[in-house]
Length: 570
Image (tube, rainbow, N blue to C red; front, side, top):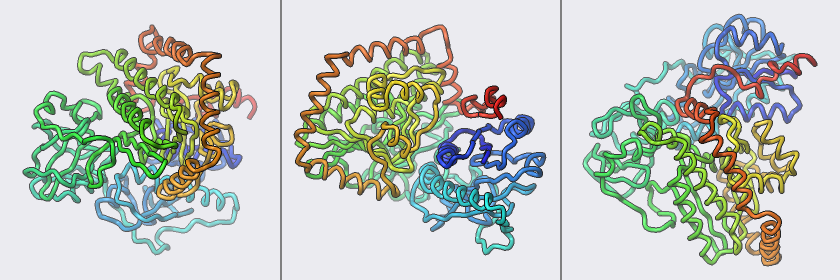
């Protein structure tokens, strides 16, 4: 079936649906919803059998929905209407929620229902719920709706005829999100910030300066006067509530970009007392800790929970230090678990952009960041006494994919998406030793195709082509339990010593043929051109990315209908 995905952006949900549809043999093209005329042109060019809208910020024009079946993916239960579905669900402490696939009509979110899938609510940030429960439910609902559409006999049901508890709600305003630090308890603050995470944040002020707050974590032991900023730790500041305290990891100051809190308020933060953690062991009581280590028998596990998977120079250096420490532990298997929502997305574009805002050089910070990523990746490759496993419970992109591929084994949860390429960021060449790790796993031709096509890989497809070593089904808790069991079996396997010996021999043989330093030098020569050369594409793309600039066109590798060769063959 010819299916057009009409979307505001190629976000994780849109990528997941695109991959699922392609795997089932459908012909899929993507159009960013920029203007009615552009959308009308896309529909005319592609002539789709069905239009699916996974992520829109405005209504589909009547000129399209009146002539084509358009299925809207709404992150709410049947009867729910409005643009703040998840926000209200979190703040109202709904026990269960869902995703509804409905047909577009004149009234927003009021069309007939083609499918709906529910899920239990989890105490989590909006962005986390969207990437896990919503995306999974949306995938199931869309595939069910597609099956019903293909049958030709299914009649979608009007919402008024269904037993629905949902209702129309307005867009949530900042007045609905307001935190009163003199009366709100920790649970209330976490809920309000969680409902605003990702976008738009909670309007507030720090050090007397207006800003939007993101990325909240509870604190179990430290206390202070309500509203007082009482401690700092790496990128986060701790603010007291009436019954505890909350770590604030990221903020967006007026007319600026979202940044780690201690960077956004760099000078002000220096006057706040530090509350460092001693060592890397996971703290048992709730607190904010972005790098943690735990050990079970012969298996060591290193977690790194970096916001949106972005890794700044400092974070790369700290993670490398933790890795060096973990390699000295008496273990035989070392798990690199990443974070709950993202494993890693490589260099930190927002922190790099911030360098240019403060009179520094974004090119210099880019160079520092990629070298720190390379040092970290090299540390992984040069692990000779343990078998290393990258366990991807969350998505990975760009350099994060190749940091993972530096491990001996890559195990990915079935729902995970990988984007092992760089060119979408202004034709960035990429490093992290990908020219060494990728061809030896998938072959030179396939490696070049991955970089050229710039398409997301599902965990299943990554396994088929050899990029990864296992695709594990189940939700996040099931995945973690499966990984722990497999790691313990790997550590106890009789062939483990021989496997380690073979690993060291292979690395020595590869080094003799071509040193890793040579791969790095070649990659960095290209990266130097990206950062310091005459072509500003990387800097322009980064600037628009971090500022969330609206798209002006759909990337041609996504818009099949705008490919002249395709149009000639269609």
